[in-house]
Length: 333
Image 1 (cartoon, rainbow, N blue to C red):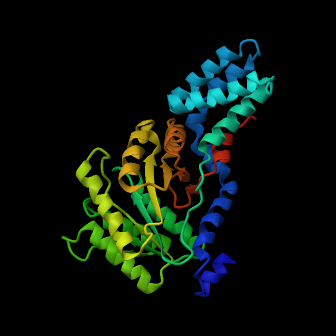
Image 2 (cartoon, helix red, strand yellow; image 1 turned 30 degrees about the horizontal axis):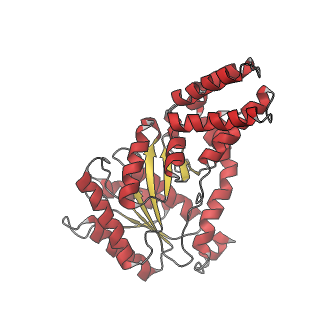
Image 3 (cartoon, helix red, strand yellow; image 1 turned 90 degrees about the vertical axis):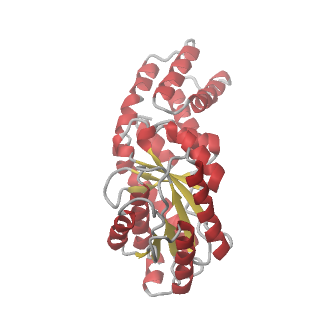
């Protein structure tokens, strides 16, 4: 019904709010991609199975301490690892858990709780255009993520305009144009070599409003989170969008490279302070054993993970499901 409405040109109020829910519902069918993408993290957590193989209630405290160490080794971070272990510990002391299977099930439930943060759907307004600002450090997969997200939205019948706001990196606009062509989206590029990113986004939003575009996705220059001047430029871009359309951007997504481990927590803190993030995208999960660090970011900053990249193809950006993610890490319970 969603696609049909868009195909007949009647997309309007209601379409954008439905998009986030529809994409999220489809996450249930993407388990195999997530399972494959978490192979290395799952292998690193294999020691947990060994811990529970010899579980006894009398030695539960030693086992829980070893469990905490295992989670830390998989980059879940000390605070989150302790929080998860304490949740299980409390249930053991309350007499709720007696067998190894019950304890492992409680571990999974605690991890799902940590990763379940309100706002996991793509939150777009009832009236178009919905505006998404995408930020991240160099090499994290930001532009690729934008292309894949555009492809998903186009697949649900939404019209998409991409703003090539990465004006510092050579060939960035060309790369984004390639993604726009593959996704069936349109693209707005700088009118001159001197056009500032904030001005480009302002004009791109004007175009989206004039043309009745459903979703505007704004690319930004990749930057180190420690570079204050460049981070402040992101703030200008966000203000420019809000000046043209009050409430915009409706989503500010931070793309995090799954190979960077707990360094992603520092990145997220800095970006969140400057631009007020609304969600996270975890990329490169297919090539890392360090993806568990996303749990610390979600837990400590209370930011939802909205998408996860589990491969290189256009279909490998998946709506994030905390249950799928944890089931992939511990598939035997």
